[in-house]
Image 1 (cartoon, one colour):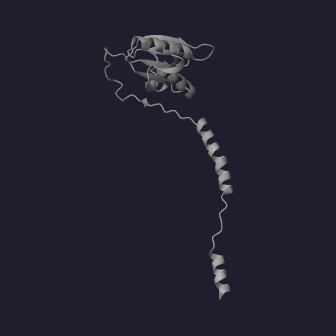
Image 2 (cartoon, rainbow, N blue to C red):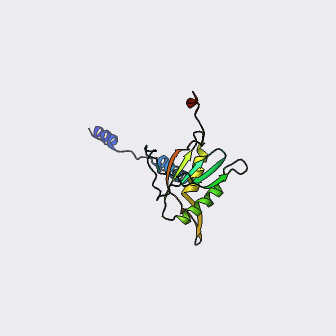
Length: 174
C-alpha cells in the first residue's frame, strides 16, 4: 500500500517551467518594436471643403486668399478676380520657394488671416498638391537657437480652378 501512495505523490508533483525561450523572445522583440516606432510617423492635416453656394455674393470687406495651381504657373489671388502675384515655373517645375516668400509677405500684411483656398486643375498630381499645401501652411524660421515651423495660413480649403476667361467646354459647343 505504501508503494501506491508513493506513486500518487510522484504524479502530483509539479514540474518546473522553463521560461528561458520566452525571455529570449522578449529580449529580441522589445528593441525591435521600439525601433519600429521611431520610423513610423503619421501626419494629419484638417481640410475645409468649400460649401456648395459658389454663386453667393463675395463680401468686398473680406479678402479670400487663393492659390491657383496651373500647369505653367502658380497664381496667388484675392478671390475677387485680382491677382496678387503670378509665379512662373523655373526649370520645368513650380517655384515653391517663391510661393513661400509671397505667402510670408501676404501674412505680414494680414497677420490675423488664417484661411486660404488652394484651387487645383483636375489633372494636378498629388505631390504638387502636398508641396503647395506645405508652403502655404507654414515655413521654417529660426527662433533663438532652434528651427521652428512658423504659421502662415493653416486653415486650407480645396477647390477646382476657375475656367480661364473665354474657355468653353466641348459639350457647350454642340
